[in-house]
Amino acid sequence: MNSPEQPDEPSPADEPSRGDTPAPEASAFPPQPQFPNETQFSNEMQFSNEMPSDAMAGPPRVWTAFMAVLVAFFGMLVLSGLVAVAMILPVILEDPRNPPSSSEITAIVATPSAIFAQAVPGQLAILVTALAAAYLSPVPLRRRLGLVDSGLTTVEWLSVGLASFVPTAFGLVLAGALTLVLTPDGTAELLFSQMPAVLVVPWVAFIALLPGFGEEMLFRGYLQRRLLQRWTPTQAILTSSILFAVFHLMPHTVLFAFPLGVWFGYIAWKTGSIWPTILAHALINGTWNILNLSKTSFEFSDTLYWTICSILLAIGAAAGWIALPAIRRCEPHLSE
Image 1 (spheres, rainbow, N blue to C red):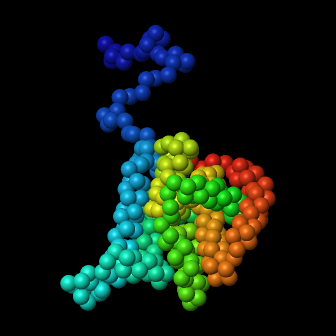
Image 2: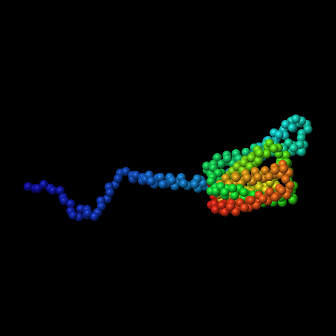
């Protein structure tokens, strides 16, 4: 009988060796994407959040900063002009056939109360423009305007303010040199000589605080901080200082304000904050107006007046020995 057929046994050649690894079977499904684990994802998100917004959005725009300054300038002129018109209009309507002469108009709008009334809306226009422009910026408002810690101590803060008497003296020299070829208009002298006692304190408080905050927010805060991101510090500080001076309109006041603008710009650049410049600006404005009001009220002689100015200059020079090393110690802040 024939024996049943046995299955063929595999030959040794067909058996896989123990060192060989069998090839994986082909899958019918496409490979699944690999996702980062939770730690990797968290680290990547942290790195993304730490990147400055300007680096992601590209170079900041400079024209918006100049546009804000232009809006503030025309806002200041328009609002002050509207107040002046409101003062003159009743006189014109009283007798339309005989309009007031230029000297009569000057007498109306150049009184201390009239100057005060015109100055307040003009300064508010500067302050509101700076705040509105910073509010519309993607950078937080306080950081955009430089309303941040300066890193200075209380003594250094005070020394920075007192040292501002030195650039004030330079401004006086420039304005005095201009009087040799151009006579001042006399508005300031009229203001100080006719200021009623009831307006002295409100005027000094206004002229110290409102320009101190508004002009520093606009020029050293909004404008200069943006220019520092695109231009060299020298270009940014000089540009903001020139525009700051031009806002003072009168030629003698323009020259007087320019050295102060450069000094304030240097402080704001080095410290990254406008708080020290707000203090210095308010101190200079308040001291200057108190000194001139006192001169007319108490009839200071020219000798006493310039002696007081010399003492203030000496105090400023002494304070500079503390202020300058403190400012130089700070690292320049070029970004918002």
